[in-house]
Image 1 (spheres, rainbow, N blue to C red):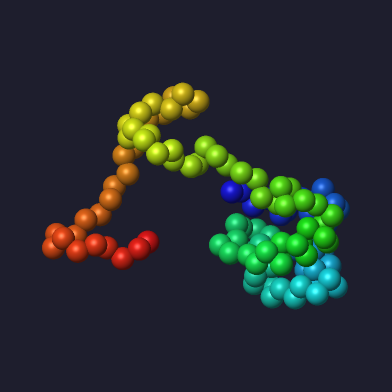
Image 2 (image 1 turned 30 degrees about the horizontal axis):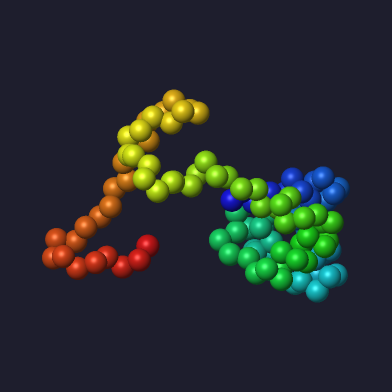
Length: 109
């Protein structure tokens, strides 16, 4: 998924993170300056659904305006490693899976 907060806010006339932060606070969502900076300039690692509701209300948008699917980044089951992609013409490198020598499984990533 691609996080599209800045463009959605700009389409609503909000050009600064501090403007959005004030509007969110007025609607009951208090966000620290650090978290607001991360939401504004990056892609959030996690976000509460209630927070998304408030952001959508403040911006007058739908969730699809904030989160844009990127299906090309999802690997399909049965996809062969090293197969040439039809759209880009590039070769996909095989994934490297680390293995322990003693046979035990690795911790989750």
